[in-house]
Image 1 (cartoon, rainbow, N blue to C red):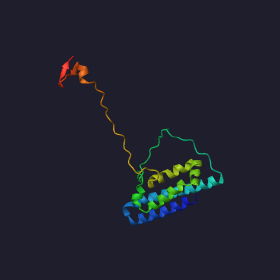
Image 2: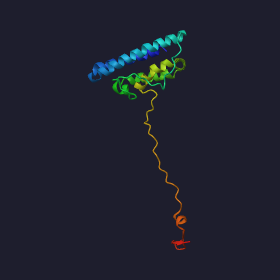
Image 3: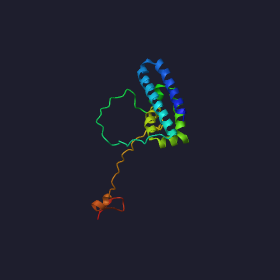
Image 4: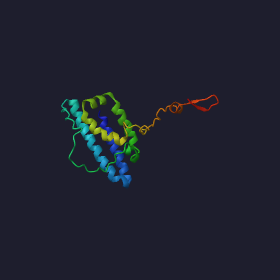
Length: 168
């Protein structure tokens, strides 16, 4: 589990290199660099508390409760896997993190500590972990043609011997 620290530290180093090279992305990548650093620190504390058995119970969920606070728009993009586009070297850390999240100890940790999911979710979205690669489309609406009664039955016509309609 110490590998969370190693992976996130190396990811920060890769982000710093690209931020120093590309002036257009510097402000964005410095903000992401700091956010990943805070994620790393919070995860380290949670892992230490989980191992020591001193972890507090998670707070009650506030899902569905309307918030009155006005959120400022973030400068960090929300598209899945956007960090892979901005920092090409992040693909290696994506694979390492994906492998780590599939390990038995990590699965046990995430099941026992739901707070860790809230920390990791934005990072996984930045790296495209858990996001399907194919675009999902809504199924097309199919207009079903109503079953039509034969015309002959409606009008009293029947097919005659020479292929002509006759009145019955």
